[in-house]
View (spheres, rainbow over the protein chains, first blue to last red):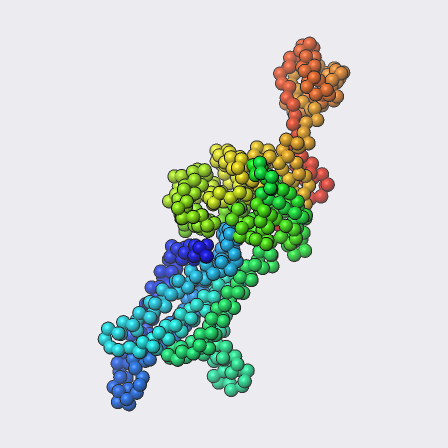
Length: 254
Length: 315
């Protein structure tokens, strides 16, 4: 276990030793702040009289936080492959993976360590996003339940992206290839339901029910269902098990 | 020395697709032994080393490190070994200290022994002054030293060093060779090299691998040695026939630099009588050196002996 934490802390330190991590943190803040958070807030300001007049239950949290988290999830979908692409591919290319393979750590330990490092960084990113709507608590009452549910949805999305990206990174020794394939897989998972929305066929519906959006949407609108959470956890476990098996196969030589 | 071998290799095989890169290696290694694996490029040295370190899984066969099977109980076995791959596994963004601390923690060195273990490894590899330097800025020789330091930081019983002296300058070369000799006293060391004098200088025994199979295994001092040949230089050399006429001389052949290669019979007695004969003849004996068959000769004989060029297996 201590070796797992050691791998995680080393990866995290290496991540912050380069400019990428800082750029990602700064740019998500920069993009989500003015272009989404402030815009949604503005819109709420203009629509508030109408909502009050209609005595709608649609409050500021639902109006601002839900679309903000949805936008953040889409942004993370684009950013996470950049973070995960080096995780294993780079270590294979530079030969540093041998350090881990010749140390008393199991394959599962290596994968968990790498995954934990990514999770720790993404937790920071999610917290940064969650702070934006949370800052509204200074001036009014927030729907805390919705906020927690939406944050959980965003965190689960990020964790799933990271697991998929880690697996893609184990498939190749070229970080660039790992990044682009991870992006393709994530986009496919994300937009899987766009066909289902128009076609009413059974297969399209089945496909749509597998999509990330379907499950993330509910959580971000404040609807907590354990089936949605289970969907994410299952997807994460699947990718991590694939990664462990892939490393094992590498050791045996494809 | 302890009776239990630190490393036991039984019938080791490795395939890369259809290529049979390592074919049935068998050997034991005890504490206090330094074993040199020799072979031409592509002979299967690095593949063998990677399998010993648990980085590659063998296609067949068994490896036991300090009594633990590397495949059945990998963690226990790996805790007892240190591995320097062909390319040292360094992270450019870390400093020497950070990196060695990381390696030590990875091998579960207790927190209170961490600083001592790292300082010791640094001192042994001549890195005491370089703790804060970034690995990415180090020269090849220093990178190699850090590579060795990470392999010994957890005081493993078994050291596996893949070409440990590549890229070192002559002064560093001597230091690292001395270090390996020193490590060899209380560890078991397997090293691969294609620098033959190096193997001769630091190894107790050698194994020559040719096309993935063991071609020769012998303790260094039992290598097929002298056949009684001596290099002889004379100030006033008589004709070769005169020398050949002496009773202790078996054969005479001209050698480079005006010297002669004289094969003597009768061991030390023959040698003494030959020297006396040179003096008696007034030939002006300048040099009389026994010619050891060097490792190089043995190596060439083994590798080229069957007349086939090296195999296509990856190294």
